Amino acid sequence: MPTTSLAAPPTPLTARRRWTVLAVCALSMFLVGVDATIVNVGLPEIGRGLDVGTRGLEWVVDAYTVVMASLLIVSGALADRLGRRRVFRCGLTVFGLASLACALAPSLGVLVAARAVQGIGASMLSPVALAIVVNAMPDPRERARAIGVWASVFGLSMAAGPVTGGALIAAFGWRSVFWINAPVVVLALVLVALFVPESRGARARRLDLPGQALLTVALCLTVGLLIEGPRIGWTSPAALAGYALTAAATAGFVRVELRRDEPLMDLGLFRRPPFVTAVLGATAVFVALNVTLLLSTLYLQNARGWTPLAAGAATLPMALGATVCAPWSGVLVGRAGPRRPLLLAGAFTTAGGLCLVGLDGDTSVSLILLAFLLTGIGFGFANAPLTNTAVGGLPPSRAGVAGAITSTSRQVGVAVGIAVAGGLVAGAGPASLAAATRPGWLIVAACGLFLLVVARTAGARRQNAS
Image (cartoon, rainbow, N blue to C red; front, side, top):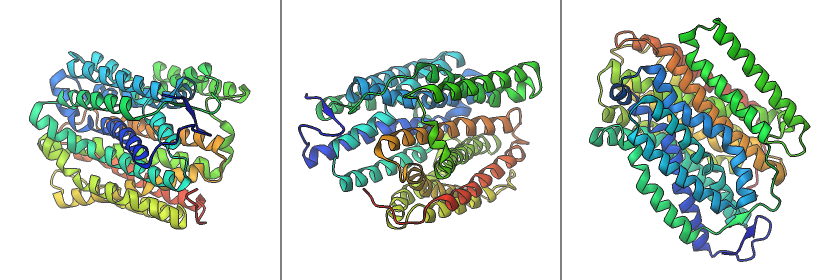
């Protein structure tokens, strides 16, 4: 098929073909989003199956998210240079093969390594698929509607993961949450070959390999310290060495980025207060979501004896809240700007966390379900205004990088949320698990309060879809 560019595709696609491209890319995005949370509900079963504790289980989730977070930006640059469809198909293949390795893993080490490879594949899907959609829809209004659908699919995928995982584990065991990826990947590869045109960036960015390496080291060390800190001791020689290495990697990354003509990250964006607060807000939202998912999964299954299916079904209110409110949030952003949905996101997330600060073994199921609903509503309202705040007022040449940094911050939030939540309950038995989770619910509430701060920096002016 002919190569196209972002600026002037030589062969415009028909409306039906454009929306088919969106559907194919959204399917792949749904796969990535579901896989970020589907494993949460299966962690107790994985722990029993592989005979590992909570701290080891944290790596099952964070190996995936840390690798994906560190490679999102460079994957986008590779796609602009080598061809988006080519990189997208490569990502699907790597993701599918790694999923099979996860399903067959005989030990924790093999599972964690396979999850890391899965993260490599996932990093080639999310930013690349969005670039394919944007390239396929040159009309600004149609593109805005497509991005709204995209945001809704993303929110739904993250919230639907625990429900899907619970049902699969109940029927087929924990390995099924990885087996299920294989037929979806095969279907996606066929659809990409049939319907998705090749495209490249108007000007390919240079790869920043030193910056990429330093970013990966800094993220891995940070999350590793959060997970292993309680075991090795926060002031132990190993932890102190970790702090020093993290600081050195971070400082080296900043120095490299400031000296490069085409850096991995445009650090100049961090001089814009709305951008900084939006990035931190995106991190906070995903910290809150993943603290909620991990703590509730462990509490419901280990402390109250629920099955994975019951624990997954309990998150249905969360999925419902996210699904209903994500498109509504996009409408509100288009009509009146990002401030109002951010205020709603902050208020509902805070309320969801506060509902469970007194959690114990006899807390009513209705209160737990209410907390999940409130948190899901907050999550649904948050994504569209945060993305809008991050890229608002920027030229297209910088908006793409701003969006990529925001996507990276979301995955960092996933990793940090899992690490923090796991650290709170590591070593807690069924009788003490509920009390051990209480600081986590305060963290969820604090993340909601921070979104209220983000809302203050967000412009209240009407935003044009174009």
